[in-house]
View 1 (cartoon, rainbow, N blue to C red):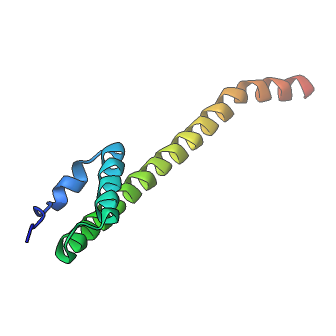
View 2: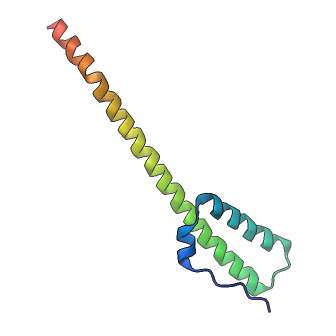
View 3: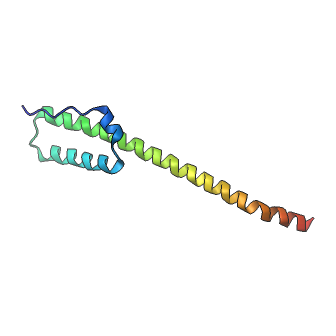
Length: 93
């Protein structure tokens, strides 16, 4: 029986999003071909689940970065307009 080499968890942590997607697609393609033994199919599925978890974590981290940048941009935009509001208030008073 052909056994797939065991993948280390640390390998998942080093993958970029694009590499993970490529590997996940390859795992799905291998399983869809139907030429794997049951054990190989289970190993491929297990690897796919691990890849999915890694990709999900990368997406969530990316979303958080975008949110932080949006908040930072909004904060900087508010600070940039502050002198205009102050001078406008002084002119009115």
